[in-house]
Image 1: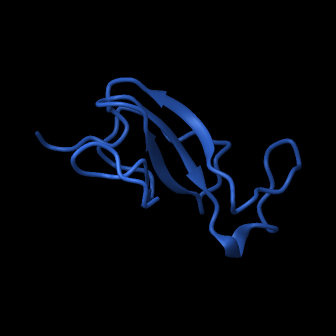
Image 2: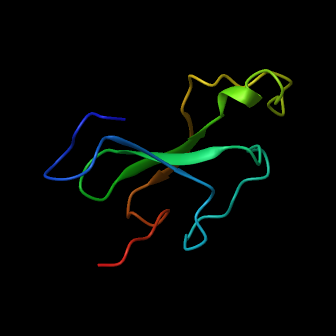
Length: 89
């Protein structure tokens, strides 16, 4: 989270809740406790996904019956146009 990229910003940012101003739709298979974030790949491209807070690590299961791990960033979308978490220009 602290690794810088470009002139400002970091490689990984965790936003928290799914953004309201997004061109993406919240997938049903993602737990509601998910903390959404992104990995910045380049100027506009992002890997969008989520982490599970530690208090939910052994309480939430995937749709396949596996437990979520709090040390894993689960990739959900490839955002090539920076449309997941829109910011004003």
